[in-house]
Picture 1: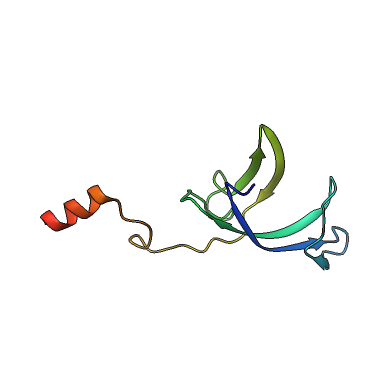
Picture 2 (picture 1 turned 90 degrees about the vertical axis):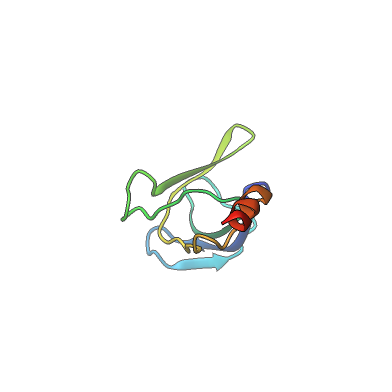
Amino acid sequence: LTSLGSFAELKKIDHHSRRKAGRWPKFLLSRDAAIVHMVRRKPMCFDRLFDCPFLGHCAVHHVRWTVAVGVIRAVNKKSAGAGKVTISAQKVQKAK
């Protein structure tokens, strides 16, 4: 999972009452529910479930195993020029 990104926050939820059952649990069992705030290391196309149902679902795979399945509730978007700029893109900008 470290190649995907890092977890900024992990909260376990009681799926009957929908209340928070604890922060940073040591493990989650099958059928447990959690809210996960994940920080991506590489750019990827995400969208909220309510905006685009096809892009709003996610599955996390690790060594050919599905380790998590979920729904994307919120996305913090960066501006178009906020990421890394490659050398070829810098050359194009200088040429203009």
